Length: 423
Ligand code: G6P
Ligand code: MN
Image 1 (tube, rainbow, N blue to C red):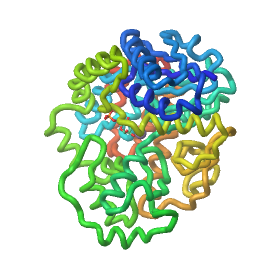
Image 2 (image 1 turned 90 degrees about the vertical axis):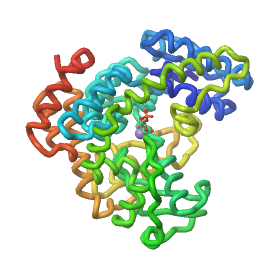
Image 3 (image 1 turned 180 degrees about the horizontal axis):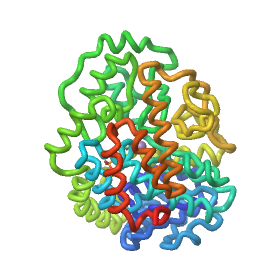
Image 4 (image 1 turned 45 degrees about the horizontal axis):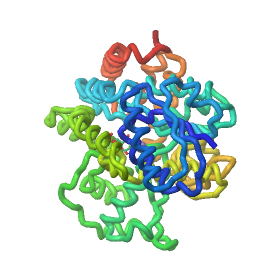
């Protein structure tokens, strides 16, 4: 069996290697074809992977490729986890909208729109070059727009990943004083726009509104990924749990002010820590039993992805949360929408579970986000400027035509070299 990892030079790779180690027995003998256009980083990560596998006696074969074709040839799974344009492009995604009073946000915001324009053409190229029966297991963001574009324009089998629900469930377990390992939350909606009105503890349904009535709003504690204080405040009003990215919809203007005061983008913050991180990983890659930093992706990110690949490969029928075609699972969204939903994953792919309607207070918002995402996906595939403008006009963060036009014009110009479809 062969798994191609596209973007294997990424800082998230140590977590993927840990994920592979945790299922090494189930994947024994697998070839990992590691691909990246950054040859030095690819070199570090493949050396690290080989050393970590050797130290634990895991029987993976690691090959390294800077060309797509040899990485993809014969692959059963194509795991995509790259960031087109790197963090320099992310900085533009985050800063261009902010200049116009809009949160850029690399996935949910207009920043994510610009990233979709860069990601989609590469994913389409990968889908065309991959074996026709391969599964594309996609982590490249914005994962739902990318998955939608691949699903609608190619015959490829594709599944979109995001491990946000794991960390968010953990945050809610903390806030509500419940044990995380016994708690199950049914997150439904769209990637980075999911909601959970059903919670189970050891399989028993909890009364979420009364739990939230009793919840005290904690002070502070915000990290780049989570803002428990605002989430608690929001959940108490909604009566169900919001995904952490709800912050950008429901506290948009405050976040604009905070980002402006802060003065640096998340991309710049990561770029500042990257040299030390890379040095640590490179040093570990030369040790007999490497223990690379968990600063990027932690542990759950890699384990989640490898678990999904194992669920497909071993026909496990594993229940998890993925991005896939709705097919009626969420009543409030189109059947052909790519939704994030609990699903049973086995050899024939994810089968989404019937979840009913979205909660009324966020139904319209989520439908609006879907309308934007569909337009964004179309624009990314076709390179049609009017469709691109329509996508931004439909985006819930964008409240004026001229703002949409400025973000689009500046974004297309700044990312020109990565946008062949708009040439
Ligand atoms: C979460 C999201 C990912 C996103 C990441 C950004 O994990 O689910 O989709 O890419 O955060 O984290 P970063 O550390 O790069 O800001
Ligand atoms: Mn995500």
